[in-house]
Length: 295
Image (cartoon, rainbow, N blue to C red; front, side, top):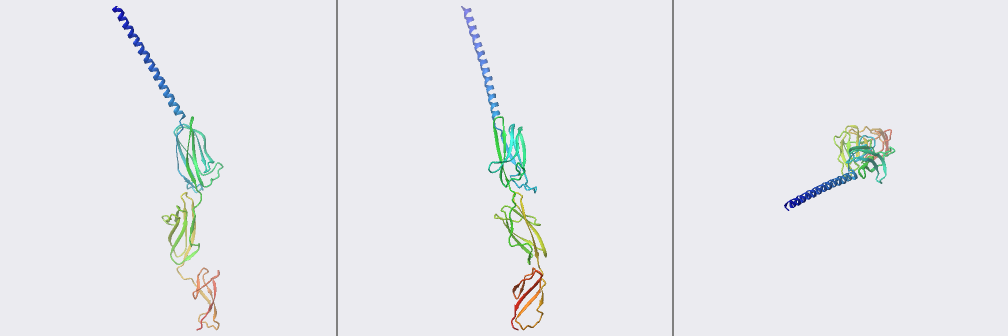
């Protein structure tokens, strides 16, 4: 009887051990399956993820006019995953005007392209806003980002007020007044710094003249680097002009109350006789009928 009881106990222990072993095996198999599923899901998520794109431009305002100032912009971009990259330039209506890169397979990392403001036919585009659009096609999904670039090739306006070319003045201090495009910079020949321009584009400065003929230039430059200029010549006259009266002779006597005054003067002279203006001909001669008082 004791022997049967001992045998029964051993059988129960054996069954218990076997049960625990089967449970351990099942747990291990389940763990392997879970890990495999997690790896599969992670791989799938990585595979279908859209590439991330970051981009910057060296210039957001260009003036492609060949003056070597802001003639082009460089687009630098980076992608987070291997992708097929295309880069196009779109106008304000969304039309493609230039293809800079078409379907090029690129690894993760950085790239760059330059745009000189021309379309696919090589002609310069019209002034306005354009999008530099980068499209990166991953294994399943794609991503797109754009940067705005403005094209401006129009020179700023520049006008002077009451300062004709060839003007003759007596004062050595010349006042120069004018107007330009708001935001533009105005420079005067030989000046170390630009002229102050107000928010409406108006400016006022003084320029010291030397005796004789003075030449100077005013140049306006806008934010895109476009320029406009005006040249002027102004003569400073500090000595009286030579005037020669040829008739009538000095100390002459007349029976007629009307006498004709004739003479010569520089053609650009402002001449008056008894406070009345007299025109000087191109050859430097003048003539004026004067009514005399008796005596």
